[in-house]
Length: 95
Image 1 (cartoon, rainbow, N blue to C red):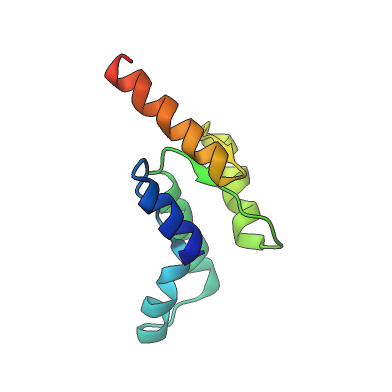
Image 2 (image 1 turned 60 degrees about the vertical axis):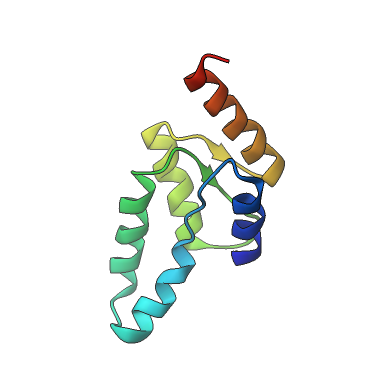
């Protein structure tokens, strides 16, 4: 996930948020899994889009459902994120 975030950050169009990095926080102050799921959804409420990376994940599946409920775009590749982000920026700059 960090490699994907690096690629997105290096592209300069988005500021990726990596929920997996809460593992350090959890190491210092362990919490129930439900706390982290709720925390992830709270972060998602602040996001403009969601990248769903392939693979089995109960948490990520829940994020997709929640994003769809919020009307937040769910994207499935770095190319989709780049195109979406460029379009998002163009719309806001009148370009």
